[in-house]
Image (tube, rainbow, N blue to C red; front, side, top):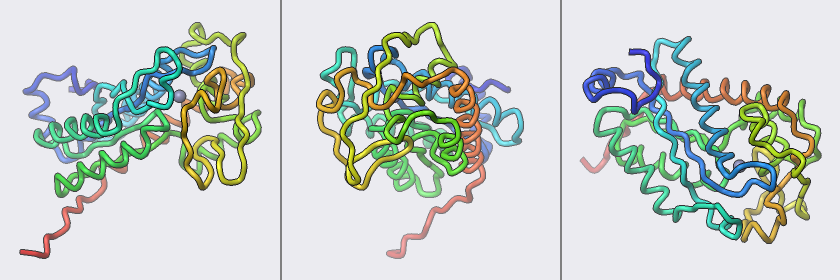
Length: 272
Ligand SMILES: [Zn+2]
């Protein structure tokens, strides 16, 4: 049994796998939303799927533990993008509950090592919440979330090394996301329509990969951006995308190893 997709197994095979203590179920999360005039609305879905699949495959090749790729949660939380045609948003609580129900089902079958790999910024606090609730509901479960990719110090070093844009150039439909899309499906990227748009940021309110300023402020996206872009996609290249994809897969494979080996921490109820 060396398949990587959770859903491509029979229930008998999954029952057998669930008896092991070193199986990690990886759940990619994303959303469908505007990504400028030059990228398809599936950008977050395509990118996080490519990262997660590559991470799961390389992890399984080199590790005795086992990772299973769960179907992507395509729809996420993005009501502030609904001014742009094509965007689809779940309500925040529906998104959290849907993840939690997936986690409940997985835990019911004994798959209680779960990693949520998130590919859409506005899902970040919600995947954190879903993973927390899974751990609280299922004592001893090891459920973790990575609120975004390319966030570790090593990844941030690479971003600094290869970027051509100024601070603010990597946020949304930007140098980073466009480079990754160019590396994955160049035929779907309309570079002639890519425009640079960086809002009026200041010391309190700004955004750049992988984080932002000390104040969180997310009104309707159309108030920030005319094209939907936040950043500078005009300097994106497939070469940068290949380097970033490789790093993101390696980073995520490290996250899987963490979830596979983390000792359980069920705690103790002191009322008893
Ligand atoms: Zn995106």
